[in-house]
Amino acid sequence: MSLNNYLLFLADSSLILGQRLGEWCGHGPVLEQDIAMTNIALDYIGRSRLLYQYVAELEGNQKTENDYAYLRSEREFKNLLLTEHPNIDFAYTVTRQFFLDSFFVPYFTDLSKSKNEKLAHIAAKSLKESQYHLRWSSEWIIRLGDGTEESHQRIQTAVDRLWEYTGELFVESEYESELFFQEIAPDLKAIKSAWNQSVQSILSEATLQRPKDHWFQSGGKNGIHTEYLGYILADLQYLQRAYPGLNW
Image (cartoon, rainbow, N blue to C red; front, side, top):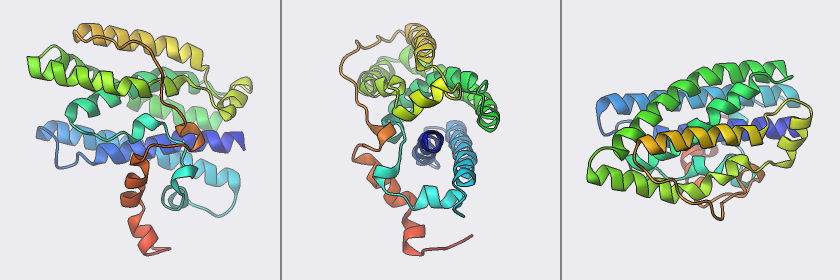
């Protein structure tokens, strides 16, 4: 059961973040970045598919990836709260992406060494994608932070506002703790050290101030979400809810 919950945590985080990035399709600030964000969104959707398929295989209940994406309620989703935060503007999107990319690169590096061979394979594929994602988001953090007065102010505001959601990245759930001792899931303490170094380095280069640590939001890994997730699922699941059993 712990492995199933863990896979859903990874899959849900990827699906919801992919859905958020997909909202930029046709609305990006310039055509090149519109396409870049859409491609990154597709990477996350593809990752979620692999993970949902693995859950279905483990449960052996004739479910498909579509059942996990389209037929569960908010409380059944285990995605990180940061992934469901609204785009608001380009600065918020870039900052959210940077915080998560800085987490996923060391995370998948470690997970690719997991004793679970199938999970390690998915992690190795995800790592290659995450390394590209991190280059993209880091470059934009630096460009906006060390750009004009307005771009600096906007990206600093986004960093300050989203900081309270970063603590959840390193709050270990029961299923993560169990799988860590089985040498399946990564060591979040080591991941946090790598994340801190990456974030501090890029923020400094971008002439941005790192916010002080304070109270952090949490709960997503255990199904407790912000109001935003309900609106995401209303869009994501509408067609399947309106026409049950519909297939492409």
